[in-house]
Image (cartoon, rainbow, N blue to C red; front, top):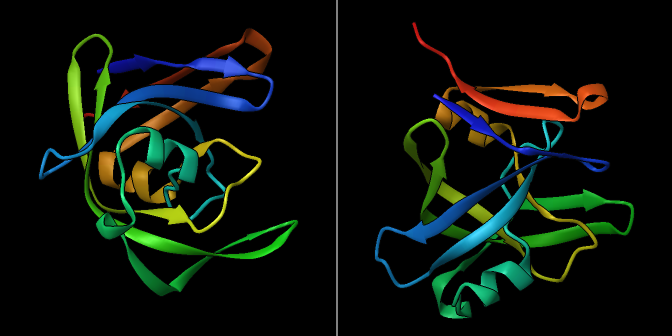
Length: 138
């Protein structure tokens, strides 16, 4: 399975469907893969655009986004499905993603937790403007 992304100046972007197990939330989001990020983050504006409500998320003290503007608390959003299309279709189930409590000057991020959950590898060649997610076969 290969999923072709968009190699932008900011890094490798992938578009995928985002929905919940309950089916009350959904749409398409552009994510930046950030191998330096521990967790997957859904921007507050994307969360709201997809129909998210504050009652859908719960506060957690365990995760704070550390950025140039200081620590930003995040809320926990559980049971999220990420739908990808490439030379086939695949769904990655995430036990949780995190939603920052205030808006960021950054895109939604797929972090290392996503790469672990999917088992995929990132092939990123900025000089060739190429990026792909590749399923690793054993």
